[in-house]
Length: 112
Length: 110
Image (cartoon, rainbow over all chains, first blue to last red; front, side, top):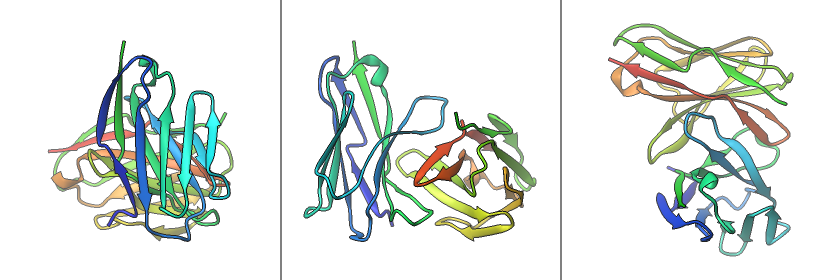
């Protein structure tokens, strides 16, 4: 049973659009929420991460929004570019735990 | 830069063969992980190791075993490969929450 539910499975946007990926979790003990980006033929790489003491975090064009009461978090890609086309995974864990629980992944395609 | 390398990018094996997948990291990380990645299922943890010679089962350990004799090397073993083990296998090492992934091995079992 997946502990982190991710949607949508895929999405296509035009260059400059704002793809939004949503994730929901059940375990209230989770306190670390990273997003990983994976390009074809490569392993996932950490993109941005948030802890539940903040509601939003920005790094460049990538923004995580976090809603602790709803147990949801989302990734927004502002001014998306074709180079952002990749698969994105959300994940969650307890910070002192070795394991990450991953969502199923979202394939984002940004058309030029 | 952290580097995690995997011994093969592509492998084709026959049903019943014993398969070894090797992973090496160069950053002295204590924790290492093996995942398999399948479309629509995300990354599922097979086994992880929190220190040399220490291992724990992940969410889908059946049909797999692991070995960690040295800190930098973590091996995944398929004792008798089956077609349902055709997948992408990803190795990772961990430092303070962040997992660093290798490029993956795409395994086809015929």
